[in-house]
Amino acid sequence: MALAGWSFGALTSLRWQARTGDTSPYAGIALPIGMYQPPTDLAPARRTLIIGDRDQFTSVEDTVGYGEQIGADVEVFAGSDHFFVFRHDKVADVLVRTFES
Image (cartoon, rainbow, N blue to C red; front, side):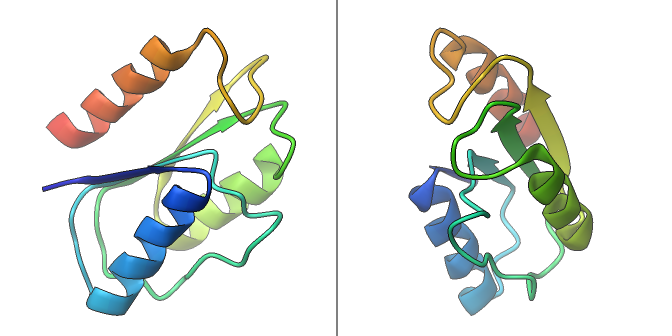
């Protein structure tokens, strides 16, 4: 099993992992750190955060900082906003890499 979520769904998935102690691989796409406080009390797991450098709801710096806190890899998409328009295939590639390794 693996978890992925986009925006608020990324936050909801992380909150579930924190509440249950789940260690499934996780990918969070456009996690809205600037709007909500994501959990930091997570069990160790393979995690990747994907953020566009033009995201309207959080900054790359906040995402990288949070990724360091929880031991997650961070993938920054240059020129992308919160919706990754015309870059969905590249987002999917990151998901596959996260879940295959």
